[in-house]
Amino acid sequence: MTALPLWFEITSLVVLTLILVGDLLLVLKRPHIPSTKESTLWVVFYVVLALIFAGLMWVIGDSTHAVEFLAGWVTEYSLSIDNLFVFVIIMARFAVPRKLQQEVLMVGIIIALILRAIFIVLGASLIENFSWIFYIFGAFLLYTAIKQAFGKHDDEEGQKDNLITRILRKRVALSPDFDGTKIRTTISGKKFFTPMLIVFIAIGSTDLLFALDSIPAIFGITQSPFIVFAANIFALMGLRQLYFLLGGLLDKLVYLHYGIAFILAFIGVKLVFHALHDNQLPFINNGEGIDWVPDISTFASLAVIILSMAVATVASLIKMRIDSNQEARPGINSDPRG
Image (tube, rainbow, N blue to C red; front, side):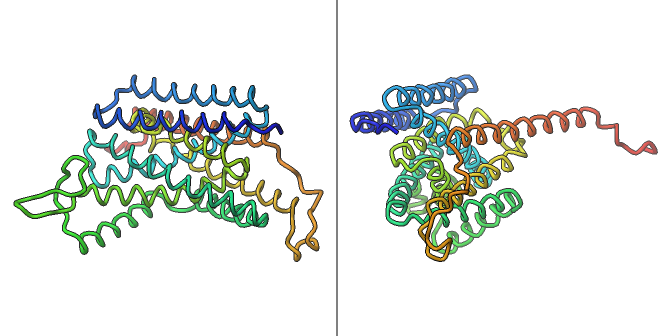
């Protein structure tokens, strides 16, 4: 695999950072609720930008770099959409005014980017020094996949947020209302924290949990820190606009978490296979690699990831249509005795 030139990596990171900063300044200078048309155009712009970036990687590097980026980007984008579900719950639970949600989402994206950058550096260091870490990454992703598919979601998350709320209300003085995006306000000469403090803590803790899932997942596709970081940046780009575009549709994509769970399980198995193939642990096959273990290609990974999300999304839309048709015929199951 041809190495990407250093100038390309540096230039790419600088340009992507400038785009993110520009997006942040746009929110600060022009706070508003994006329309469906505006959100759609921004999401399409960021998706096209990611595809152009993959094309540049193909031309400047080779097809392997491009496919690894695409597979990593789609994986991280899928996990970011799952992250949006929790953001919706947080916004609703704390009654964040819709006009403030853009700023809250932008803060959440910045926190996510910082946390993922930290985990990328740590992950790359661990992989370089301890090849057996792939066993742990793989096992963790398999555990996360099972929890994602069969664990509780909304109810369990709600209990955690309520616990945070109770602790904060006991420890700090909270104002009853928001004061823009400020976390501190003054009422009758007395200082109070606003509910925005709880929202930011909830968003930050959510970002931390998702970073723990997403970084091992993408390291199962590529071990290039640059590709890992670039894929994460592109996955977070447009996430704010996607939140407003999908709107109430998010809670209706009922099978999406199964698709994400399958992706995590698939990558978990791939990581375990990779660890077995390059095994150095003395208590497994006398410290020798196991040659018969299949090596899943990046092309195969990309196909599985896209197919999983497509099947989960289509199945959710079909169920949504069936439910809508049943609601349109309310008397079909009613008691004839009235």
